[in-house]
Length: 334
Length: 294
Image (cartoon, rainbow over all chains, first blue to last red; front, side, top):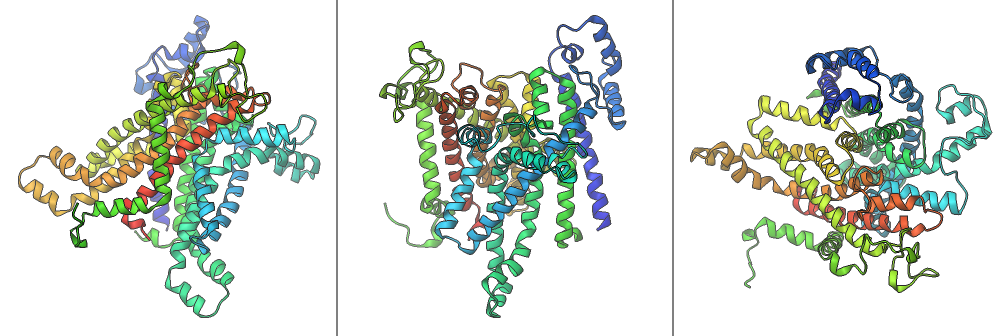
């Protein structure tokens, strides 16, 4: 197991280096002077000269990349252009919001996706099976930003049940500990804030969960169908075990192996996909922050934010692979 | 036509088409795609009004089934008085163009890289596939957004960005198939009669990898339409007054309380078109990929 883990971690390094090269080159591949691009057209000459020397823009490209990499290794992602904050500080402030939203979406999609998948598999070709698989296909065919707006129209504007945007109402007080608002509210036993935070997360989380839910449902169904055809399931049935025991104790455990991989990979996708959902629901996470930076042309934020998300994405995919090796011992032998 | 009695003589392709034809959802998907393509091609004939012509007297007219709606504007009008049905019809053109162009870019570059990697193996394979891994290290919509942010927002740049982020999907599929085909006798035979590498790759091997590629192309059309709509919704793709479905949703967003139809209807159009490609793509996969057959 250990050599496998080490090999996988080593493979990650060139990928991450490649990611940093792409993020670095994007700025230089853009037509125009990077210093002006970073500071905007109205920047003073002294400011431009300052950023030129700081980023080494007058040096050859490979020297600049070396400086860029050196700063990265020190955890320095640079400063934002408009607010003059450390990019890293801003990331740290916003990342909990993105994780909280992604975890909530993941819980919703796993729960319903797996239930629909299991029922569909045990009742293959039934009306329910047909309906839920068409439903799953509709789910992956929908533009999620549109779904978010429609849910907003129905549940916030017409019915008035749920808040439209943000993480908390302005009137709610909450002491921040972890910056995961729901967790913070539980830790401080602040139940009104807890309810408020949960109410706020429902719409964006449901919106974000649609695609992974559909994918999990389809994956669970096909994996479950595979397992239900195996001989040991026939044996279990022949022993006279109840249908429930056969499905949930014997079949599900083996059927879940590929599903776990799917779920893990989807989690990484969610972190990136949150950019649309966060923008629509004004959810103050990393995704909305990067999008705002795109609109304001804050290239330092775009650079740092993209690099951060891509790194997280690569690490999550690695963890999923390792987890897969743990629950499926056949893989690590190769 | 004389029916072929001996099942052994049937071409596997005929079996696959039979299987596809019996798959009701796939046929439904094909019908939707047909409708979508016809709408896009004959947009000027089908649309009742000019999609970009504003009419101040007809602002925010509701759809015909709604109180105050009229047959003149069956799906209502937007805040500039433009006919939504006409904009949806012309929007099909944009979506079709985006899908074909971006998937075309991905298909071409991806197949080329994938064939080279699979055929030459070794260092070439390693370099190409590591590069693909790097592209895959970004969540794809984020990479598209960031690329357009640097290239500048326009429909053309959105298509380029989407095309590039789809390259690895095609490269991986082609590489896998080429690796599998390389060891077969017909490749050895081709080499024995003195065929060059390029001839072997593109005339002998490549046609045999088309099955999974066709499936990926169909599903790629679906996600390209979705991603292009997302980019346009964010203001990074098609610019006004282009009747693009995602951009129409973005415009309708500010009218969400006054005129729900401006935002809702383009979303249904996207859903419908994407669903068509997904249904058909799923059916194709079942038919063309024997490993997935029950």
